[in-house]
Length: 316
Image 1: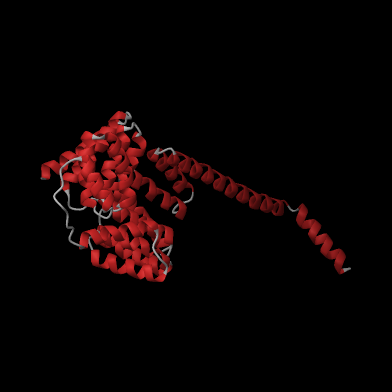
Image 2 (image 1 turned 90 degrees about the horizontal axis):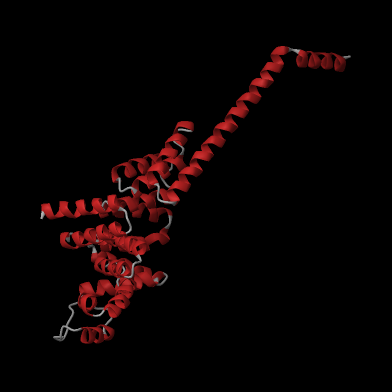
């Protein structure tokens, strides 16, 4: 009898128009949510696609649509920051990464991106501060701290940290080169008087590959007198002295002369981050970047670098 009554009640509910409407409403909400998520994904992948071909402004436009669909999504906020940084809009890049870190303050990748922004802004003290937070999460990331100490001219701290890393786990190829470069900076370099020619400078450098001053002389002279030697040692320079901006400048020039402009531009843009308190060298970088961007037809970027060079010249 009880079973029959329950069956009657259940059948009655199924026939009830309000019950049916409620079921339709639930399904409509579910469908709307799925469509919303699908639309979000479409625009997000469009943003990633545009970023991959360096259309950063279009990527940002797609991210703005994503943010309208699902506000403050962490992945979207992070992508905003990355695209603004590619556009050299440091202020906006910083605002978005700090917003992302409010949601996930111990995210290693977000913190690493913030370090990159501070480096681009040449605020090495803040970069070091954030890198120390990363070390609390991942103690193996102290190799990055060495290069930051170097950029900040904290050579004693850089040396001490390299020794600690060497004792604990050994040095990577990059750290070995950086250690050699630090030794050149901290030890007096005694040299014979050399005739200013490619042959003698090349022989002297091959006898002492830790001497950046010899390599610099060799690059300067071979640039105008022996292109084959210049290209060879310009390629070698970054491997031997990965934190020396002049090495990047000469490699960028070498690639440009070989008509490998995209590679040259990339090397130059990386190397300029290592320039510290050297307006003349910074101008040289900007002039070279302007020239190479002009050759590949990117006149707006070329003008941007000319303006940067002119601004420094005005201050000087």
